[in-house]
Image (tube, rainbow, N blue to C red; front, side, top):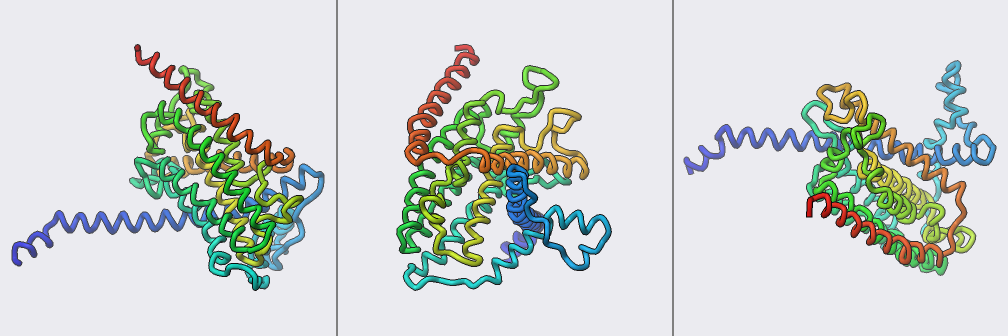
Length: 381
């Protein structure tokens, strides 16, 4: 007993206990910050969608909601009002205050479970995405997994269950058809998306997302203006991943699961109030997660090859700057997601499936074989 007490109170155990507490504290801080920022971007992505669609259609969009005190501040108040800055807050409040009606004919347990299952995978996905280099001695990633990409695809594949459950639980034909369409569509494009990233990891030689970013530092062919981003080495992989991301998030031109002209609203037809809002929050959260993955895999993550911004920060300002670079790249993809929705017409369902099975999967296979052959030749065989 005395020997055990001596071991328990030894400096090594005390240090290990302190390290564990520090790790847990910083993990909680990073989780709270990332989830808070993600929810902020989800809310204002809806506003961005409404303003960008208004710009495309030559109208104003939300510009009426004003808070009594802040709205009276000269210059700032009217500017924020015209910008529609307060609109997401009002929309969120409306979702909470509307009647949460559950139809009598639905399967209630699944009906309540489906919106949460739709929302959760997007939050779990961002846990392994490096959104910056370092702040102090802390890496700007919640979980730095050696199999980050495998974890990501494992979590993303769970998202379809929420939509399928919503269609099944509604006990109605239009939601059911939307759920069936979603399951077929997401399964089809998951295969193409997963195969598209195989050449990336053949080049990097690692499944860790931090290693992918490190590989993309510097300049391509030593050309000062050309970054060493994988989009230039694997343009076909990026194209397949990009289109598959549209299909996986059920965005135009692949919004067949909710296709209003055919299915009224698809899988969410029977939902109201906050449960209805959760489906849209899940959609935008998945868009953000997909954008973050594309930035990480193909556009260098938090790096820029100029001014020394492709190396881990040695100070606080540099770390914040890297986070800003990552967010700026991610927001550029979000704008592209929104722009495509309002510019490209919807595919027919047979066109959607043919594109996935007869075009992208064979193309992804060819890309893997060509990449392997090039690497084999460059290795001197």
